Amino acid sequence: MEQKTNKQVEAFIFREDLKGAFLFLLMRRIPERGGFWQPLTGGVRVGEELENALVREVQEETGITSGIKKVVNTGYTFNFSDHGKNYTEYVYGVEVDSGTEVALSEEHDSHVWASKEEVLSLLKWPGNIEGFRRLCGVLEVK
Image (tube, rainbow, N blue to C red; front, side, top):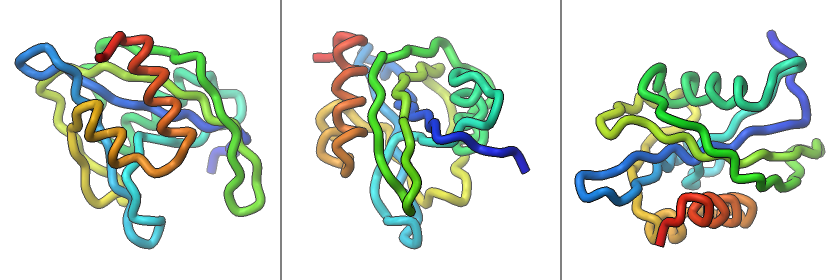
């Protein structure tokens, strides 16, 4: 098993709808892990670059193995603690083709492609909310 660092990546996966508006992928954690809606998150392995970890996590948690159009670094990070460990999370946007299909890992039980307003109403954690706002600023989402 690969050794993880105290770094995490967070990805708001997004695509354009037929009208040119962005839709963002949120996934619901299974009840045993909180049952809340979130963007993709995952650990960075020792010796792994952040963007490589990001692409790996996208593949592992969503089944998206092709169709990534671009990666957007928001420049935003935040710190959090979980089970007594401290982490730094780096927030990105990942644009995918409009027809991209999602196959969830066992960590999540549902997903939705949501508008900006829907995302802001569904997210639970302040760091995720601020990261999403930063991405919307970079993408100039109204």
